[in-house]
Every structure is written in structure tokens, then in C-alpha cells.
Amino acid sequence: MSEDFDVECVACGACCSGKRDYVQVFWHDAEKLGAARVAELVAEPVGEHPASVGRPAEAERYMRMTKGRCAALTNPTPDQFVCAVYEDRPVLCHALERGGSACRDARARAALFQVRPGNAPGT
Ligand code: SF4
Ligand code: SF4
Image (cartoon, rainbow, N blue to C red; front, side, top):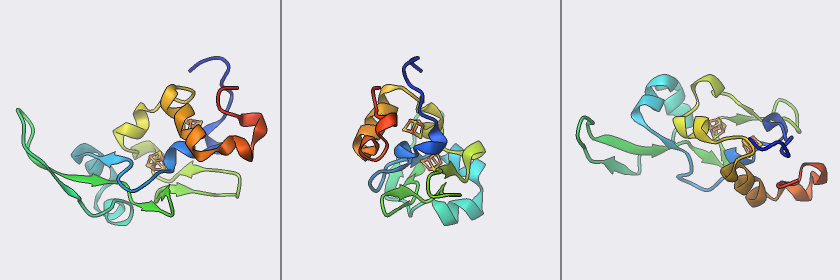
């Protein structure tokens, strides 16, 4: 993370917003989530990844998006954004670095700078 980035994720949530088929859920992600949370939070499979060396075929599936937001994103208060499955979130969510390019892109996409000038991406 670059030193010029001081936005806290709990005040943002931009990278948890996107269109359908945004956050992919791999089989190991689904295992961590468990059947009940998969049923609640993961959308129906859209296809299948074929088997490859050392890996069986697996369903292609994504976190369920509701009104453009991941179904696991909660708002304890109107200004707070908290992942309900944080400890077990998909590997792609783990990989997104706060303050990195994907983070800044997500914030620019969400245009959060329009409502939170002090948290403008790139500032
Ligand atoms: S876009 Fe960046 S600051 Fe916002 S929640 Fe995601 S990682 Fe955190
Ligand atoms: S699983 Fe959690 S961290 Fe990942 S997109 Fe959904 S709310 Fe965000």
C-alpha cells in the first residue's frame, strides 16, 4: 500500500460493488464458506471450468450481487461497510490490496470521491 492512501475499508466498500459475475468463488472458497453460506451468498453456477492437471472440473460461480453489491457486504451503520464473511472471504478478495491499483480503480468506479471528497482516490 502506498503511503498516500489513508482510506479505511470499513468506510469504503467500493471493491465489494460491481456487476454480476464479479467475485469468483473457487471450490476452496466454497469449502471455507460452507454449504449454508454458499446457498445464501453465492449465485447459481454460470458454467464449468474443465479439469486440468491435478485439478478436477469445478463449477464456475461468483458471489451473488444484489443491487450491484456483494451479498456479503453489510452496513452496520449507513457509513460502515463490513464483509459478513471476512475471515472466510474468497481468495480474490484476499488478493485485493488496499491502496493498490485495483482498489483505486474500484473507488474510481464507485465514484466515492463525489460523496467523500476527503477520501478521493489517488489523494
Ligand atoms: S476499494 Fe480499497 S479502500 Fe475500499 S474497501 Fe476495497 S480495498 Fe478497502
Ligand atoms: S466476500 Fe466480502 S470482501 Fe469479498 S466482495 Fe463480498 S463483501 Fe467484499
